[in-house]
Length: 581
Image 1: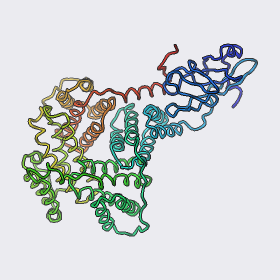
Image 2: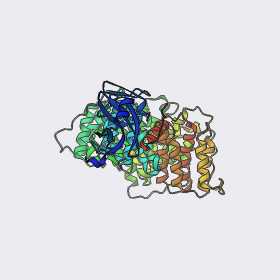
Image 3: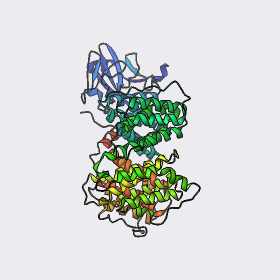
Image 4: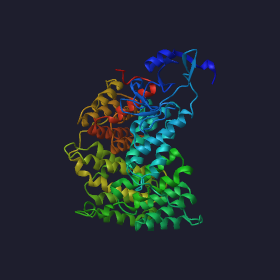
């Protein structure tokens, strides 16, 4: 540090007489304190929420902010309270009875490192404002995606004994949406994701990960058999050891085969969440890296299989029609069906998706098995089921109970996850998931009685400015119950020739300004992924109409997340939140 870095800020005698002063150094407000014969300089803004520290109290070397009683060791600025950041201090020199301050001291650690460490603190203590400030700070230093994602994944897989859950799934969904969002909404997405991980882990005991077997030469089929056997008897420890061995010994596609096969040995496990969570875990690994994280991430999904409920145990899958038996019978026929279809090329017939919406489950299963016999791939069949599930949400009748929104949502989220899984492995087990998804579509049929009025292409207002339509859509989310209007506005946007990317950003904006729940986030992720997977005009419209209707039914909320994010953003910019009194 050189002498010319220091700037004169005040007369020492004046400071001694007053005990404290607020001065400007390098364009920022600095609080000076004369305490126990020494002079100390700190940033006048409390790092917690910006209250002027010059209004605080100094006793025995401790500076206390009067706003939330955050306490700081005066000389180095370290906080006593984890929910408050350390306050910036400035070196001081006394020359000729004048106080000089260095306004730009060298940081102890690089800012990105500091923010990463603070994010870990925020996760550990479940401190939303600390997490928000960390995400904003990391993004400002070019580390706003991978670092929050990786830090939260490491935390979430380690500190929740019951494994992969709502928090990590929310984080993974928002990581998938990240590239479809506008600028600041990407920061919001990462904040919302890490906050959900922290909340989901709060108060939970940690996980203690097992170990793989020393033998790396066990063939894939034997590992697969061992894993399924352990899952069948709900032996989580044994299943985890087998899975970790597979992660060490097999390529990712074979590990996916092992997991998705076990996840479809029973029907629609954990009311859709098991397969959905496994798919999101794989998609999260696409972002953070297989080599570094596959063992911890995939081991954390084992409880989603071993502890899951099984749909064949539910009365709705057994009576008045035993649709569980239909699924199991179709699964038993798979080897012969696939063999018959080998080499054939299947094109989805006109009206096939409507058949999947029929009221006769036998007709639905026959359509699916016939498609396999004719050469339909698991990817093609999963796409058709996901199209049908999308329509259940788009056509959801608002005269149903509010909670039934989640019934149709679960079916769509499951069907979309199955389709995504087919891009990762060609295991025939995913045909079984298509049967399960189609039967869930069947069970949801009464929720489309009558079907909601969803406009067709060409029926919208094509004379309006697409930007004005997007503004109206956001305004729609400010009203309770404007569900059908939200669907019409999305259709209008297509008819007016609006940019679908701008529409997705608007839906993301509407989502992330709210205290959006786990299902609302999944809803938009599924809509965007379905939009990307579909090449026909009506299907793409329905893919975005469905989440718009779901979101409109659940918004507005109190927007507590947005308040926290706004505070963090304004503090980072150096804005004043509070004036001195």
